[in-house]
Image (tube, rainbow, N blue to C red; front, side):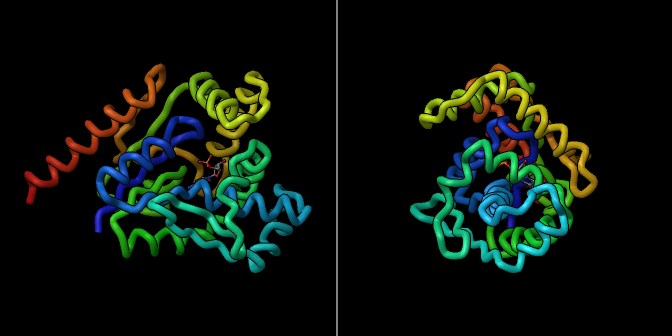
Length: 227
Ligand code: DC
């Protein structure tokens, strides 16, 4: 099985680019952020403090998380309910960032993520895929862009979805989330030593996709030459 790991901070274009690349390659796309978001939603609904590790850990046994593919698109099911749309709000983004810092939450998801890569060709995106989840991935990419650029993209995306948001607020949240993702104790966001860095600052999604495709082509060409 072949696996591609794409990590990077939020808003670098990871999901849109990964989804498209996976479709082009015929791999399963696994959006691990959606898993953390689903847990974040569950904790928010329960009324517990998302930053309280013990409270969150106690809730995990009540969560049945499933990923199903509907017309090739990943849908997240929380105890049987399709929550794919509900997990895309800023409130859930923040909750996901909080719960993903807890080791019990990361352990809860690790086996499921690895099992997916064992049985399928996968393109998995997240923060710790190349460093923790799939350290043996065939190709690791670290996708970045400046915080300003990522906040602008996030803002445009949310406006397009009809949400009322403040751009300065989005930038503050992006920076706050970066800070937490980078400095947490367990599986912090960092570039794996053998990852290829792709900086998409200032590029359109189309340009970023070309950049990414170039890296993939080069890597697979080298793999073919070696075999
Ligand atoms: O990629 P995203 O914005 O949907 O991720 C939501 C949150 O989940 C983000 O704050 C970081 C966290 N996350 C993580 O810690 N590890 C992953 N592999 C994926 C996401």
